Image (cartoon, rainbow, N blue to C red; front, side, top):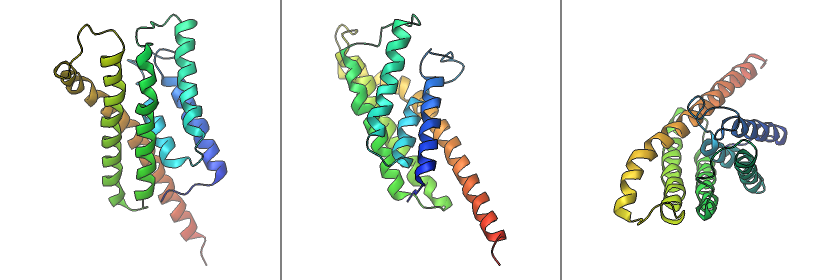
Length: 191
């Protein structure tokens, strides 16, 4: 089980919020230069942050970034439709996948398998809500059908899963290095 002190959780919340601010859409960086970390932020927050208010706070941050990008930065409002509401369960599925992983986590190398399963499962459910929500409810498709949506899953899900996996993998590597360094330091101070 992941167990972090309150100050560490606050620091991680700040880091995750900063990561979202720096990578979400075209706010500060080109999407092509730095892929959006939003999916990873919600997964990691679910895994390491205990307060329930963190989810709505992060969603409000994402919403605020999108609104300000559209209103002040001239970003297209193409994705800002009634389907935007589908992002709540989409990001919620990543949050819950992170919480599920936190229950499975042990400080052993074998924890990589439950991490991979949690990331993959969360990504699939998230895409079904986010991509499916946009496809079926945005009004941008003339005649949305399941047979029309399946090719979008095949086209877009691997990229989203890859980006999510990259960010979560980096976070896991940092955690593992910190854990290993901390354990080595503690062992060297024992009498």
